[in-house]
Length: 347
Image 1: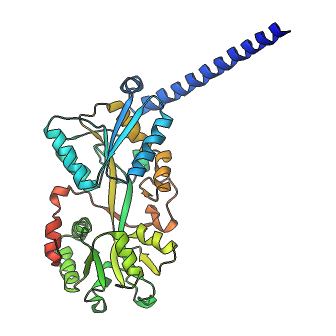
Image 2: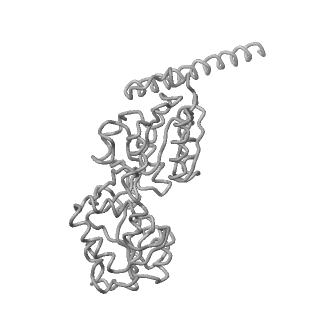
Image 3: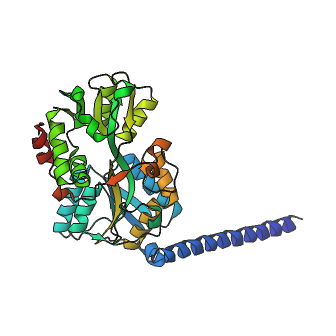
């Protein structure tokens, strides 16, 4: 009887092993099928077995993306390096000049990613998910695709601004009632400044900005700080991020925002490094981030995914319902100090 029991246990163990091997084979086949569709050499990716991700996003968000990716592709060991946009950019340029090629994939502001492309430091990878992204939110040559956006809009204190005078257009900021510190601008809003100049055209854009300058706006640094100060009644209006205002509003603050036309979108694209030591894993990671699974993970991080077939953070922040204009300009063509000098703001 004992021998029969041990034989049965051995038989069940063999059956379980066959099921496990069959499951692994199916999983590997699915990976291979997806990889072939993406133009990725999966066997090469398995040999590479590593991902190095440079990110300008929050450290906890980068960590979560890498963890989710390595869980999906357990043959990959993933690491990341996080820094602010400007320090990250300088690190990449310094490493490239020194012939050090240490990372595979990078995310940063669109203006910074476009600069890396213009310097020849990116490699093209046309993701199979590109069709889920709006025109203007991916590079036509496949060098980058947007992941999430920051929408710049007009926000206001609902206790200080009567409903009948709430600005509906950018030009409404030029009303004399908003003169002398009643409008707040971020000291780093040069991306919005040049985006508006581009969409309005140089002549109309400059006239608008000159008239806005004559309103003598207040300047602060940091969108969260601006929302907090506006909630406290320091100024009635601000040019700031819609999602920051939306989040502060849900916590009971007396503020709201307007879906203006155009709404400048500050993008956060993802791109493959030209000298990536693990290019096939890098491509696999990019496609993971751009997939529905990756976009939903970004939404859980309170981001506004650029992918159009994923539920929006809130319906008001649905990109399909807004007149968005991405700032697809190299940071080298922007002039942060020039923006501050134009408005007479501090350096």
